[in-house]
Length: 588
Image 1 (cartoon, helix red, strand yellow):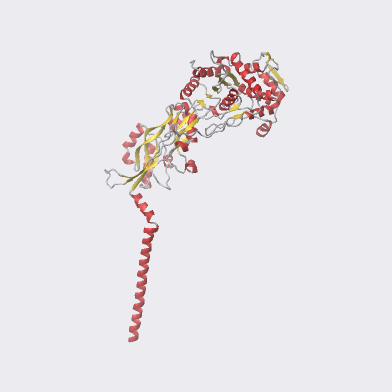
Image 2: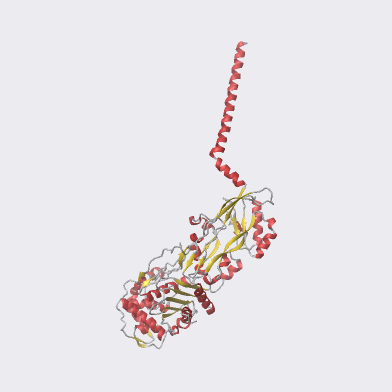
């Protein structure tokens, strides 16, 4: 009996020990969990709890303004209505309902609207920008059927001059999925507006600013205003001051528009490279891109035969006789030409059994190089090309950096093309022929040049032989603390003596005195110029060019006028150049 009692007590003690250990284990587990929640991840859960009672919304930073050289507005911001969408408290069905309905009310698709939301990290996004009065009215009318939608006042980009500066200013647009993956856009959210093309894209980091954020405590009653819990003010973006003269730019654009021919007019300071006008016609209204083009608008622009999205100022074309500036310097530099040398112009020249004609089939008789430039006599250059060869022309083109982008502060520009035997063999699998050098010497054949390269070449003739970097941005930021962007220094065109420059300058002045550019002859201002007429594809008109600078004795302006399929340089481009100089020198 005593044995059984001891055995029962032992079992009881054993059970009590297990119960004590179990209670201690539960207590330790609870204490550990409590320690983990309060200490280890306490801050994280505290933040989650805070976020559950707070609504955080972005405050877009005002984008920096863009001014011309006189302080006149070229791009600014205007107040507009936008749709902000917060998917965080919505079910998938509610999100689908909102986006589907919006795609009916607005000129957008469900796929496009959905693509602006990052479902991995849901947060408020700007779903649609710059609502029209009609769009605003229909959203307000159906607001109860659009959960998650807020109508907010936002700052949208506004270009008061519309298409007149579109190509170099660029425009704004919704950030793309590819851009969101780019480290340069890591601070951006889906639906954000970013610079697309032109200065808006190139100077995006300066213009953007830093967005702010506002957090409000959610109230249970819908009629109560959510009080502000925390607010971080946005930091406005930096302004840009450009070298462009707004009034000159507008005047040049309207000249081309009245002419009704696609083309470009560029005016530059030959000593500094500051671009006073950089015009490409036709263009597009960048304001249309704030909320995205409608399908009808997009198709109209795409089907326009003048191709308004193409920037003619930085696109490459056959330069025609303006290229004779390079050919002349090459012949002088290689010793195949002197100012005193005489040529017989008969209207044509036979090269390797093929007859190459001059634009004037009658010829000019006995001439020197100054007259050859003034009258743009092709056969003189045919003869010189056979004597000096393509290598000399290629070398002197390289000295003017032709065949390379100018480095203007824009996201993209064409390189142009200076052909060579090696290039032709590699690209076309064809041997170099004597006629190729003949064509190249007068800016035909495979030679291509942009209007911007042409104006820089003209400036080098005007300023005594220096290649200046063309540029648009004069200053970033305010007048006092503004910074000038870093840019390359002007470099001399190598190994061209002053006498050779003088020979070319005299020829260009005589082109205005009695030659192909005589329409530019002005009563009080000496002008130097060279016309160009470049043949294009069969059935199309020639390209019309003129390069010019004035006053010839102390140049203040270098200019290029280019008309795509516009006709002759002397007959079509030169009269426009005269009007530009009349404007600049107060004769208009």
